[in-house]
Image (cartoon, rainbow, N blue to C red; front, side):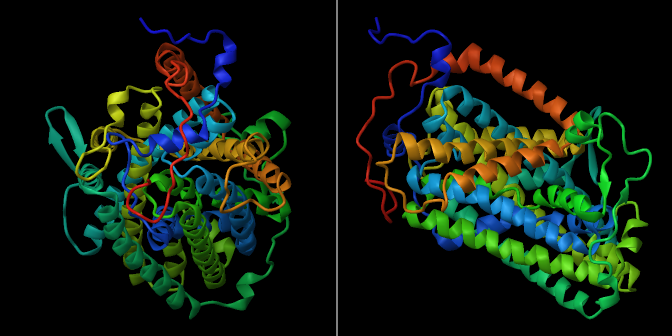
Length: 515
């Protein structure tokens, strides 16, 4: 019979996992991961997950309906907000370089229950994100086929069911690739990333030939009410619902609303942090790779927004139901560019799907290693040191959801899951500074606690700009998560069972394995 006393009461919800124990777990022969990624790999991974089809659409929508030419400022504000959160991630990742990202960081600072909630949120973000984008990948593939005059059916009939075969195939392909090895997947993803960045740069260069200075005036259009019919209780933002304020269009508040919209173009950098356990010399590599990726992505988005609003007036974009960058090229008579953009979007989504599949598996892997999910999910391949079991299960789930269901309605669930993680990581940095000032930190957030608090406040503000329907769905997801935690996770937690004895922190260096 076990002599380990089992903790009881609500106080157990705040039990933390020691940093030393997290680091020791990463060296286990059956559930440790191989360190093989460098700065270039992480940089390209960040670009891969942030530059997708959104670079061709989100800026056009924000310019047309919210900020006008001032959308460039919206992108800069969003980049600053993302940058603040990413600084907190970088400090954590350089201090606790193990898999799990925000989940692991929260477990070490704010306690098991909040760690579970944030892990549950990240599962929501990566699962729905991978499924939604795989579905869009299939749509763009059909567009490319049509552009070349090919009549390829988008679905296959399997008995009474209709299978969207393209999403199914792309998810299966990257699942196999990720099982074979993270470094191999990174190399393949890097090739796709270089190609899509080249397409983005090509589009930017061509677009500059059609820029007219007059289209930048007024840079920040005068504020006006949003069109009637956009105030439905489920489609308005939570802030508008609670405060009774009318949604702003243009003006300063429109520019801020535009920042809330385009912020989601930067979502994905948190997923890069889930690979910390597979990074060589993570204390230096993680911060460098994350920040370099964010800088490149910001430059690309700002350049696209400048070209977009300079080619055509924001009023012309607003007259189109769903404006994209292709809309601007069509309005200036360059229709062939739409096909190039469709190919760029297709390639762009390819790498995003890969990184989200990787992130989903690493989050579940970390939670299983801690006993909050079944531990058999945390076994790694003896040869390739990849979490084969959980990667295959994740791939199968995403492929089935993307192939057989309409997941477009869950798009905003990606955003709220990410932002909730950003908030807790920002707070966690402050807590860990106070509770464990002795830990080595290769990177430290400057002006702490001011900047972490500012990061948390800005992310909460962005969350309040999401629709009430998104919040309602989020609440349902959290209720399900709480039930699972109390029914399974709390009773099987390694920390709760006394199996989390603080071990000496292993040295982590540039070798393939920590030692």
